[in-house]
Amino acid sequence: MSRPIHGGNLSWAARLAGCAPSELLDFSASISPLGPPCSVSEAIQAAFSLMVAYPDPQYGELREAIAQHHNVPIDYVLPGNGAAELLTWAARDLAQWGGCFRLTPSFSDYDRALQAFGCCPTGIGLLGSEGWCWDWDTALSGADLSQSGLLLNNPHNPTGALFGRSTIRPLLSRLALVVVDEAFMDFLPPSHEQSVVEWVEEFPNLVVIRSLTKFYSMPGLRLGYAIAQPDTLQRWQQWRDPWSVNVLAAAAGVAALSDTVFQQQTWAWLAAGNEQMYEGLSKVSGLSPLPSCANFFLVGCKVSAVALQAELLKRHRIYIRDCMSFAELGDRYFRVAVKTTADNQRLLTALADVLPDLESAHAR
Image (tube, rainbow, N blue to C red; front, top):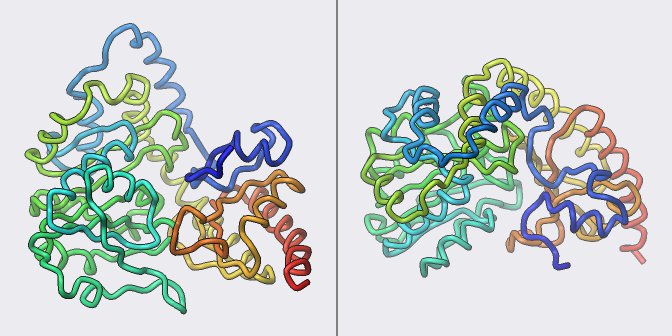
């Protein structure tokens, strides 16, 4: 079985660990450990009888819930079969321009989607010798920006960097199309988040894509949405298959967005969990975690991250995400999700157990 491109491939990891997938502690996929919320489970059960009929092709109830959540008109909302489906249509739009920029390292699905439409993007390096940094003026110099697009994820995956609104807004007047993937923005409380959704009505060249599966712990349902001006979304609707969102996912989305108690619980958990994880990783010899505003950390490693991943699976049944699919990172970085206090400590203890042996072997 080939090495997975994405995290969360429990079948692959379980084979390496020699156990059942259910016995693994999975830090490879950046999914909240708190959900799904009870409100989502109840909504799915209540919607079960609706499976005998096709979904509402307009997804009126779900679109209305999303529109109210973001205070935008309903015709600015398009639900999709996960953010991945919507990124495909965004890539088709981006490919129509003379050039496309995207940050590196970047989520591998970006290149998959862009290359499917004949677009070879230009990378803008985010990681420097002292951590993550960027310089838009230098990175974009020499390009005809009026004929170029930008695909930006914020917070950035896999570094956890957060771009302020003041950094993004000037780009909207320079570039032909700006697509902002905000899949992890939900993890920031309103006082800290930097979403640009509120600008979509002002800028026809802005598209925002969100995911409902990471924050609410339901990646198996596949649910995301795009917020953009109606002309853009009507064009995408003509490209894609009908009924992209199933009735259970639609019901789950409506329930999730209204669950303010779960949202508050998640923000409180992450504030404490991030502090515990960052401090713990920083104290482990041979590791260099980057600060992160999201529910995951990118960690520099003095030994092979692939070897570390294998040893953690075999000795502790713990699954971390190697970064081999991020071409700019390779074998000296790994990524870990933030989980419960007990699970975070289990990972930290396992790392402290495994790393000295790998360092010793590497020194020989």
